[in-house]
Image (cartoon, rainbow, N blue to C red; front, side, top):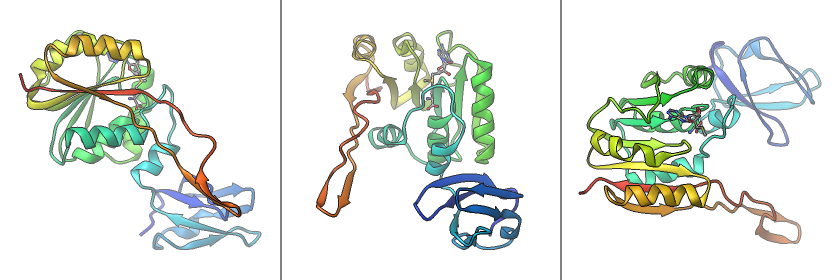
Amino acid sequence: MISEEDNILLIDKKGKKYMVKCKGTFHSHYGVLDLDELAGKDYGIKIKTHRGDDFIVLKPTFIDYIEKMRKMPQIIQPKDAAMIVTVTGLSRGDNVVEAGIGSGALTIFLANTISPGKIYSYEIREDFAKIAEKNIKEFKLDNVFIKIKDIYDEIEEKNVDLVALDLPEPEKVVETAYDSLKYGGFIFAYTPSLEQMLRFRKKARDYFQIKTIECILREYESKKLGTRPKTLMIGHTGFLTFGRKIF
Ligand SMILES: C[S@@+](CC[C@H](N)C(=O)[O-])C[C@H]1O[C@@H](n2cnc3c(N)ncnc32)[C@H](O)[C@@H]1O
């Protein structure tokens, strides 16, 4: 049931998505929606603008939420976050250390996956931490603990399942991550450039069983003349390097 405190997802007749608080009015190209009339109704209903156009009202998934939330530094895309779960087998109840939190996109993905497990997020910039904290709070997650700390100095947590790194020099965290991880746990480094990826691998291979992958996503489109891959796509986001603690 929809409550006035909810973030709701509105989808217009062309499929465009908007995430808004379910309060007051929403002004669109198709006219004005009175959102106050939605409280107490079930998700999935349609609401009409004052001009008579329909919008469907859905409960946002965590992927809708990540897509629409406020972002400052570059985020780890859900396609890459999904590979982290695929390779590591991260599950409900697991515990994670990550750095930095940035806008909190990876944090929300992982926290949602491991709940009631905990995620400890190190971040050196208070302004980014505040944005991430707001995003996490809006999504009502209570298993994220943000630390304004430099992860290059230390990792306080022990016996964790994953140390996930999205920062410029992940190789500086290899030894502390090794001490923090349980046997069978993983270190993960997201590196946009080959040089960063190679620096990390060179250091990490003495401690972990290493593998690097890239996730390339290609969408298809159907038009009158036929079905084919879309002409434009995101060519590269980052290299995903995983190391398992087995030594
Ligand atoms: C690209 S952003 C992370 C984005 C995040 N993974 C997401 O999906 O929203 C990199 C972040 O790492 C932080 N950072 C850089 N060096 C750090 C360090 N030594 N310790 C903790 N955080 C650090 C930066 O301030 C920045 O917020």
